[in-house]
Image (cartoon, rainbow, N blue to C red; front, side, top):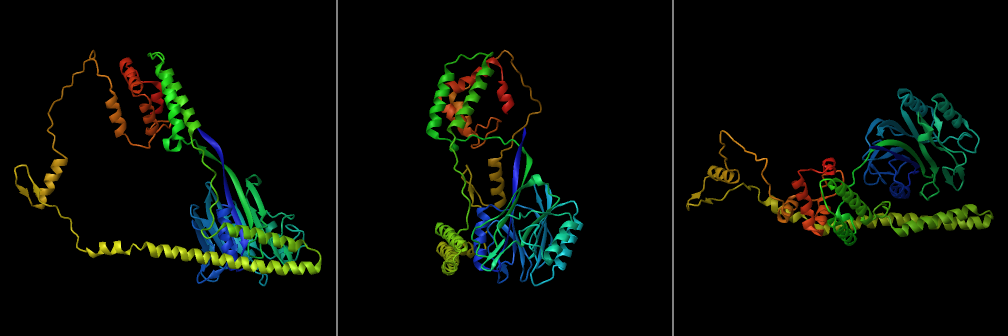
Length: 487
């Protein structure tokens, strides 16, 4: 039966302000918050690449001095609509629905009109598709901040009203840009054709990013139809001692019951039900999975990040001018040390990685294989029962094939006589044990989900009772209903 479930699409946005330390922190933030997509403005670009892209993500950016970039999870299919220096537009498939994702950067020293025209073109070409726009517009407006509207803000508002776009920003949120000179709300998240019920959250985070801008996260949550997944019970997932004790009690209890054709179905159904309860009771509880961090990220860096964040709060909360200056200087010194420790941690981690590669050194194995460049398949001569030898390749081949696949002479007519009144020999313990030994392990052919290892535990708890159940079926000439449902 299908059941209702929910799926979350987590997005992030950050202006890195070309800071190397901010790119390093970004990798940890993406993994920690389990972001599916990360849009960037002014990334740190060095030697033809953008740093900070976590493992398992694709990097999309312009090929020369980009001012926008997108990190997207490998498992998400995407089509590049436009990849420019200041604008990237993607078409992605999430939860069987197409989304248009746009990352744009509007420089404060350049005119807005060019980027606004490009955004209008994208929205016009995709009028009915769900669209999300992330960008630093460097524009102020009372529509998304507590500040008054400036000229650039009016241009952006005209575009928003014209295209029927929704502003996801909250005017009472933390400032998206914060520096010593002041704060501002210039980073925007805009959406189109997205139902309000789908929006799970929009938040500006106060964590240290090593950039003047703050991290913004935006998530959608949508229900989907989910087919019930069959549970497979395996002994490796059980508390083995407890499980064996419970199985012994269960088998002992049922071995004392009298079995007839009338109650065989009832007994087996009850046994399977109680066996399922035992599996649930003895199952090992898995601990919650901790978030993955960058390989170089340490607990000391996490603690240092929290300490720097506290120093920043104390400095910004101080109202007395002389004390504020002293706290600001101290915060700046400690912040510089923190950024340096991040770079050192990355460098040391990479050095350790290279040392492991050098120590492993598998080049010798490759050399030994390459050395024998004329390896040919050779079959040694075969000694026959008569004492003669086969040395010819073709004769050796035919002899091996006939030995493994002998020819069977087929008679023209087969006559099979069935004796309806005949008696069939009952199953023995050795026969059943051999059958169980030949079966494929780790598989659960029935809907009940009991793997071969579970069946084995029942068999070894009481071999005679286990085999006797099969013999009852043989004597009664009856195949239980519960087994018909399971196989």
